[in-house]
Image (tube, rainbow, N blue to C red; front, side, top):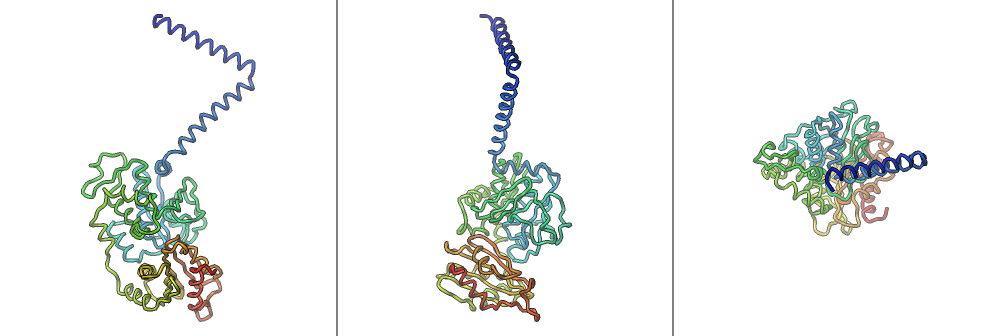
Length: 398
């Protein structure tokens, strides 16, 4: 059969199919509509399924590209993990032509945090009121509910990227992975999902020749964020954290990393550590130390980091005071002691208190408000009673 004859036969067959379809529609119009609706639904469902199965990094990048500008908001008093996640998100946004502003509440006091910001030359703006947010679309990193500034409760985040427990969600995108040791690991995965190439410290992004790149300063920041939130990949980490660190490695600037990790330590921090060691109280494997009044609150978590290293100690809480408020920082390497829940339990019935964190570390404070302050400004809860509460909570008695 010639090619011309084959085309004629094909046209005849197609015509017969169309005639049959037309006859079917005329005879069974309602059934034809149902069949057509089912076909459209099937195609639409398949398309939606394919979109849902795309890597989270790809979906996040598309969400960022849908906005002209965003605010990347860190939690109060941001640590390296929060700052690293923030610069990573901002870097992704700018590569799809979305302007990004980094903002935070509170202060950056810890010498390690200050070194992180200085060495990586981060441009970050502090805020105290919702009106100071630089854009309508707010991306929360390393926390999932806005807090720490006036009007925070009225903010509906555009996106949420976090590894802490919580119920906060984003309007367009939510990714909360409590099994990860750091938020930086999640952001590193986003870069890998979109095929970004880490840029070695001695090269410029333009020399790599990739659609998406991961600059050296961002790689270095993300790795340090992972290291700090997982105690140098020794506690509270997952396989994903190790995998993310391996992906980031080609872009690491070792000189910058060393400068961040080894900043100078202030005299007050050293004195607070000494007081914490000298004044420690121990019950079995649990340790609590009250360092008293101080001006540098970052001395409290640093003292907790030191005390958890002591032989025979598996969980520790350090208590300190500033301006009449009590601050607590806890560390745990004991599977029986989830530090975030431990602190919440210890302060559960105290007005003006707040606490949180994850299994290996947590923080809390008791403020001078809500009826827990005497007329002379002193907190009604005795320090000795607070210490006892902490021991009871660590031992599971509360």
